Image (tube, rainbow, N blue to C red):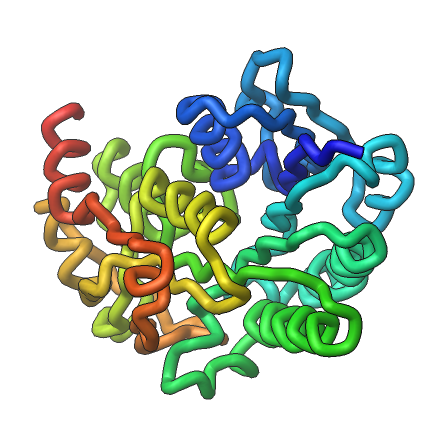
Length: 294
């Protein structure tokens, strides 16, 4: 049977919906199915296209939701997880439910139906020379899934690629929500004339990657990957203070939070060497463009 379907979990979220748009833009021939529970995704992110179908449901039920597609699926992009560090302390039960229990069902489904799995790993467990994998419930859950997927490859032949995201920003990012990331938070504070809030000490270093660069990297991992780890960053890092000062407005410091990382750097060159990937957009230019639009 011909395999002509792509599955995107979290397809109504920031990165998932952007990936779907990218696929349509480059004219892929496969049909796309999104699974989302809309806990952080939005129906406004839906793309009106006859080749895209949206299913509302939980990843733990993936075998039921995709029963009629299971022999036709070429690849699963698994992006539908709980994806915030600080919030995972308060909501650790939800984090483990989504990222451990639900994700294990996705991994099992891919294994049972011989489907390649593209898994969104996280730069949050790579800080401090890899020692930050236990820094938060979120980072721990992601590192355990990486371990499980690698073992499923050894034990059962599951094909996979790991893509690591570095502080993704750009059109479609989450705004006005506890799930907002730093660039989205700064943008909203700037628009409202409020001081930008910096978590102390502000010297934490981050790599920031534009959404268009991220989704291109995900596509390349699928097409060119050889079961490896791909760090989709720019290789340029900035402190949070440096980023805040680019907005040219007042800043305010808030207390250090649990799980705060102080470094996040790219530790291998697989994305460039294997995929030919290179991020194009620099955060400095993005912020200049944002300020000029206001």
